Image (cartoon, rainbow, N blue to C red):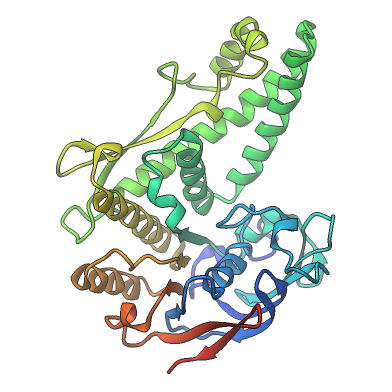
Length: 374
């Protein structure tokens, strides 16, 4: 994979940046063109003006469905419904994302059709959005997704491994629902699941070690002790053990109509280290601070290993922080040296970030417009 697009960007050096962003019929943005330099980008405006849509467009420059997990059809601007386009210069490469009505999203890198997973080799992009504030309170799926995004940021191959595992699992689940009992069919699929599942588990465990090691024990944001939990206790330790567990679980899985063993059942657990309290039992403010701490740890770990910080997208992150903690956050972001995009309802939320480029987003006639704000 050394000759994959963006391999040089992942090998260290200057931080990867978005230097140009052009949107066409993307949600509330009929036509928006922006250029960026190394300064943090502070985007403000009233709710519903289209601030988060800009961050979402940048988030789509990484594998997956972006920070909102929206289907391609949901992003199309209404009422025109003519399809949407995101064009960007990312880490020196020209990227184009496009979706026509009724069609899946397509990706081109340097004018060549490319799989989404190739985007991970151009730049690492992390985000924190308000919907994640309930990460520790809701189901395991969201925490698993959070863990996999962190893991993908450290190892771009993780995305391909997850996709391969999920495809084999879907095929196995189809056999289970259809009541198929042919052991040969199951054995072939379970061998694939075991191979990819063991890799998923190993990469996740390695990512947790890196996250914990990059936290600041005495910093302004609390450290967390992290672990991976499974509903049935300890997970099978290697590919052979996972294959055996899947085979043994066939009767139970057939009764349920789905696979009940494997890394797709894992959960991320966190304990507020200083207090010894599980994250789910912490206050709302403490839970938010823990999330910020983990995003910063992820960014620091990447900066240490890759030689350059990732791109950070922080949506409404300052809204519930006091001035002191906002200043601490901005100091941490500035110290990382990577590209940062932040949103907030007013410019006062970025008073402690004096060197930021400020953009104001307003809505006029159902269309978002972006203007320099000094």
